Image: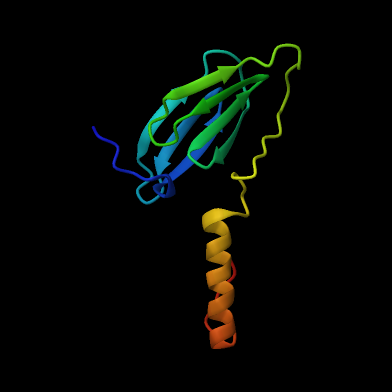
Length: 119
């Protein structure tokens, strides 16, 4: 099956050393990936055209459209635990989310707030 999704069509879930991509419209599983090292909690971040996954001290870079592993870094000597993952390109307040909020604010300003709902 050929993946015809764009990154904007996908939702990513991370848990149990796995990342799963779902079609955001149908909920259908598009791909799944499992870390070769590390266990438990999986922190994920969409970083432009890359998906960064960190699992108990091991960091992986995935292609967000296919789930294929691009690289892995063991970060030896830095320990394990629940990571924080940040990038200038990857942010829950940037990209599509920011554009949606701007569109909602513009619509509310145009209509005086009538008929709008909070996101």
